[in-house]
Length: 186
Image 1 (cartoon, rainbow, N blue to C red):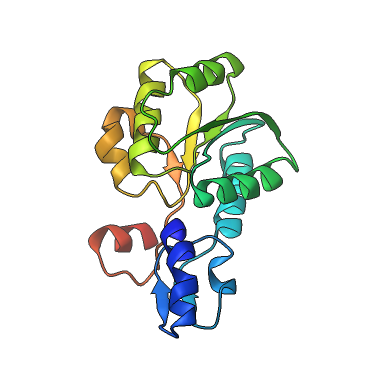
Image 2: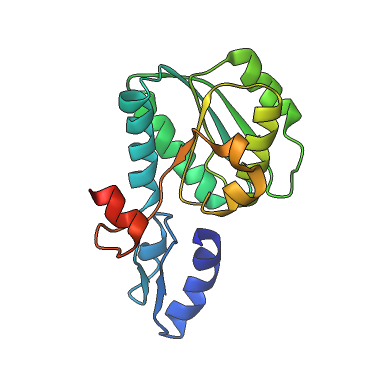
């Protein structure tokens, strides 16, 4: 992940040990030296893509951002989403939480009051899944969007009912040879 790679990369660079991260999306990762690489898209890319998705595909006019301030990844993706979404839409509020949080009532009560079209939550599977589950239980009807940190974990924690209808960016290539991928390409 970005946090782990950003922490270990300087040591690996110093020791001239190559590191290739498949999921470290923070833009600073590859600026740490010539032994540090990534094999994925970046936070600026996915923040912009998710904002464009919200504006163009969902036709969202308003958004709330809930970012995990203890995660460099979440803070970075939030910034890029905000920059792109703000060009045509209105960010109503930006809330925050910490990695260890489990009760999001305060943040979600504000979301419910503001009633945005979309809520951007670039967290990870556990926290994002809990947020989706609690939002579902509170009757919040906004579309929740996330970044690649959601992964499969968001479904396992949030449950199908709470996760259904929401979207996140993820890594994929059209030549992935699975039944689901072939169906998507078709």
